[in-house]
Amino acid sequence: MSHEWAAGSAIRARARRRSDRRAEQRRPRGQVNSTALTLSLFNLYQQYVAHLRCGDTYAFLAAGFRVGIATVHRYIREAVDLLAALAPTLEQAMTTVRKKAYVILDGTVLPIDHIAAGRPYYSGKKKAHGMNVQVLADPAGRLIWASDVLPGAVHELTAARTHGIPAALAADDVKCRADKAYQGAGPAVRVPFRGKNLRGWRRRHNRDHAKIRSLGERAMATLKRWRLLRKLRCSTTRITPVVRAVVALELAT
Image 1 (cartoon, rainbow, N blue to C red):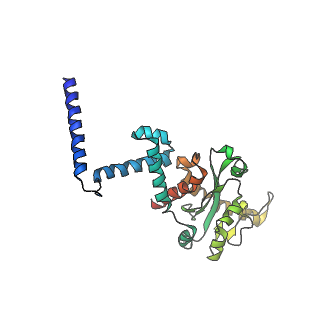
Image 2 (cartoon, rainbow, N blue to C red):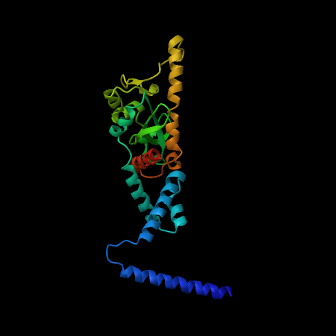
Image 3 (tube, rainbow, N blue to C red):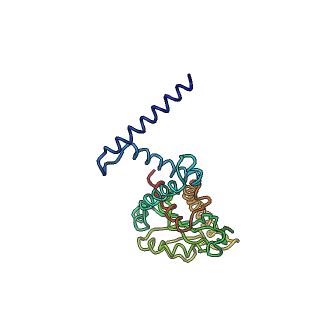
């Protein structure tokens, strides 16, 4: 009985496929199959989220969705590029920054596995290869903006100047808190006093400054909860679009 049921199911499935092909042939040129499009978009969303949030590889996703690795690569690349275009530029982010009492500036190094790339990507601070990204957060530690990435060997202050962050903050007279790495960034960027044996008001200033600045770690945690950013295995030229896509998704929620 089970064999007859299986045979009947196979016959019905072939009949449905033939019917679908005939309907496809009868459909006027240029008209899109909405059901197929919906499924494709749904699968694209699933693949993209699994890739970014969970760090799943292309091969793993291809096996899970029963498609080719090249198809997964194309889908994710297109989705990343579309979302990256929605992330705010520094000029656009300054519209939000101007409304804040102050902002927190911080930088981090996103690990990469391209150790053969050598010295330009090696961060002396993290003792590992990676890409430098600068982040602006509001007083509560919520992510406002993230920069394009630079090689991990680039110093925090140099990276901030390269992206024009100190100049943009000074132009709009926005107060900013940052760590000692940004010493000399300009009057808009306030940093703690240097030295280990500080006393009196300087010591109190550094303690209060550290409490404020620690909230900026929330923005870093927001980025790094996307597991793909914890260990990037893609080309270094694709890391900026990935970061910008993550920022666009975070700001949209």
